[in-house]
Image 1: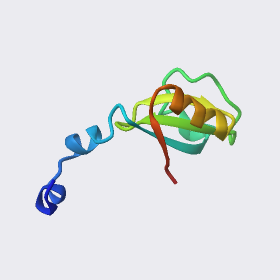
Image 2: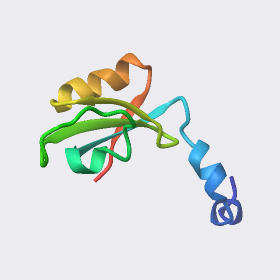
Image 3: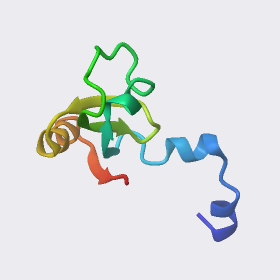
Image 4: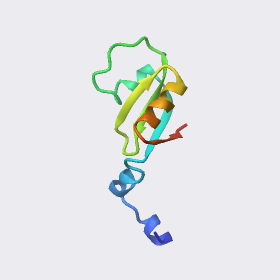
Length: 84
């Protein structure tokens, strides 16, 4: 990909980069997870959990432990990367 092509990448194209290969792992509070994980049962406000998302933002799993979240990414043949 040339520098010009990178500068002109669309949001749709960007959403597919890393698809099927990369998972984003991020610690999040329960209040922020409600919009990301539809059907999430009621969780105490302020509870911190580790979320794993596909490269396109699709939620994959939640865990109360970082190591478990990373293991879940590896079990799905995805390379985990941290998102802050």
